[in-house]
Length: 114
Image (cartoon, rainbow, N blue to C red; front, top):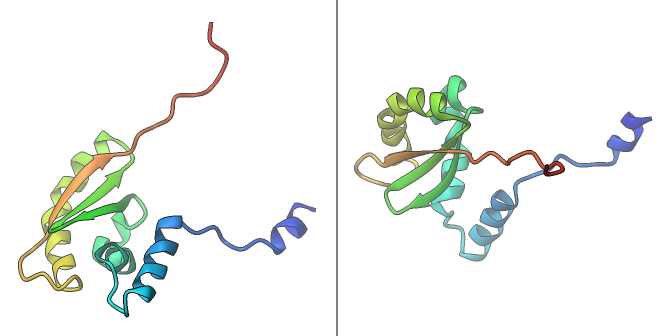
């Protein structure tokens, strides 16, 4: 029964991904840096990090990547130079980009207060 209900549903997409695509189309074909990063992320980050780290913002020559926790941030730190160099080409940046890391915020469980 649940399978039948899910048949008509499409896969959910991030609103940021959708907006980047729309904005790129309006702007005459040049894509936003964040859209470019998202398109090449799996290839650049590699199998180990593609699903564990998520690019969330581009500020000039800096890409901000979010990871789940402090342990992942410590390990990902060793990949930032490689990933920055790999992203520089697709983004048209001569030098390597700076990659910064932020730990994802976790929501406190919502329950009755005592």
